[in-house]
Length: 459
Image (cartoon, rainbow, N blue to C red; front, side, top):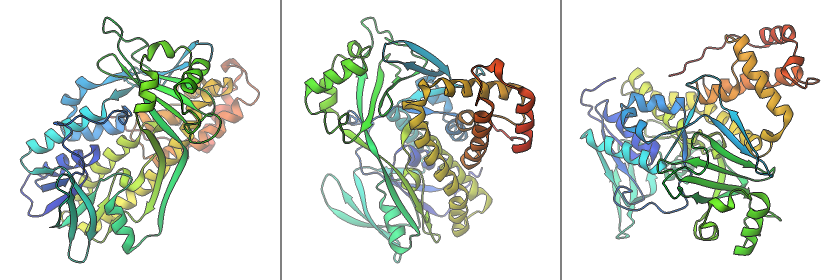
């Protein structure tokens, strides 16, 4: 890592999680960084309710934070989640472990608190200036200027840049500018489902009202409810369901309909959410979509990362983790090709585009798993078998969920290996009812025929 003074200034659009962490990593390499953020400073202003979606921090997101020297500050705000707690219609609970090693957990973390830590660390370097209430309207690559509008005064101005990096989310102005010049793919794929945030408050004595070390899921087939723990013993609850239809956000337009729906399908949650109707109608309905696009860069002038390049639905808990990997990959590529920005931007796109597409696909698959498959006996048997095969053949077999969440194997490789492994699991459990029915000699033959040795890299 370089700590010498760099002559070039990097402009970042967006001071969210990816932008602020990237600013830290660039400043550690001696770059002057100017960050422009549309929103007000969240450290001085209240974040709007209902848009937090607590984040799941996993190994591939922890590693970039470690490289930035921030984990000491982040660790105190993490709550470990060891697995899924599945709640059925009758209120029965079934815990499904994420992994089988002590360290195989994921962490619930507040988006706002983590963002504040990253912004503070960026400014503390003395090389990062964050300009708030500055909306990027457009980018001109010919004269290397961007047009910014001050959200408070509504005045516009032009600011020059040397290299601009868009971490400005799914509605990225930097992405739009790149694709106005050249675009071979610009797909914004709506899920057809949206989300609504609710809240389980702490108990009367400040205690957690449900298991604090689990990600809670109420799977109901075409829709679901999830809950992630917070430091203050509350839970951020998120309802995911279709936009239209009999059970949909469009149809639930009165407090009576909402209460009846929850009493019927989430009865054990109702006593835990005293402000159900108020939260439902006061909090916004968030849209969900996947973004796949190309290119991610323009010459040596511009690059997009994070949601600007590959917005994903939140069902694998990897949006932030993937964006943090983007940021680390960029600075590692800078280390490899110092000041050769055309090569740097090209290499980052080459390395990360295939992985962004892969996690986007796996996130949608995991939505189906979470809202439906977790109730299926065959799914549970395949999961149990995956753990057993990992124990017996650790050099070859690692459950796909583990590859994504507990290791830093490229997403594309995890997806490819995961598909092969799923075929093996399906074949082995085709006529089986329990692990005792599995023929492990056949399992070993299939695994060693179809899978190469796996090179895992946990933190």
